Length: 266
Ligand code: URA
Image (cartoon, rainbow, N blue to C red; front, side, top):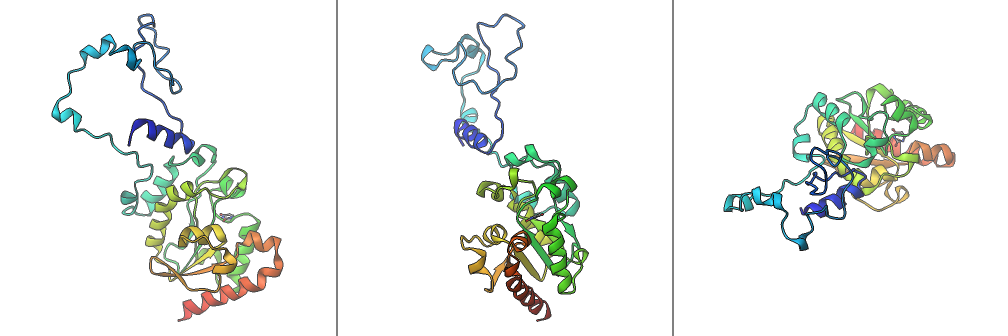
């Protein structure tokens, strides 16, 4: 990828870009103030292409075949192929170090996932909220309490399922995850699903269902239908936060949970 494009791409993701220091022929000897700094849009003195190569370029050997064939490495913020081989410990560590999108800058904690790592049921939500960000655990706020009650209604304690989110970092102001954020985070969830290998996935809310199933449809249209993710049946239902606001929809969520139980019993 061309450097200029790569910089624009990283900047669009909220990742600060630094350009390598270039010698400034006007700077006094020993002046190191240009060692770091924001991107320089105007070429420093001596770097203006129209002005021809600056003196210090004379020291650079002429390009050879070997030289010109060297490719700039692609920047892969989350190397999906290596994530796919990580064990739990390494995966959780990788998530905790992740800076693949701009959300890392505002987080207090990454929110990896919680529960039984060999559970039959995996619940997938959207993204951490304020309380989850503070505690580093998914679904610990009011929506989490309702989720616990929903699980309990089908005879499952929170500790008996595995709970994770599409995003591992909190979007500011609880806004929806952006597509590029979900994409950067995807290898982590994929690996979690592969490690848990649940018998059924419960996707709660539109963001979870749409990202998991690569769909644009609303929850209302997806619930009640049969889907699979990586060969695992997916039950789509309403997000507990939505149910808190629209309790009249709880009956439909109950139907969804019954479907999930049916899959577990099959
Ligand atoms: N909502 C989610 O989707 N996930 C959480 O962890 C908390 C609230």
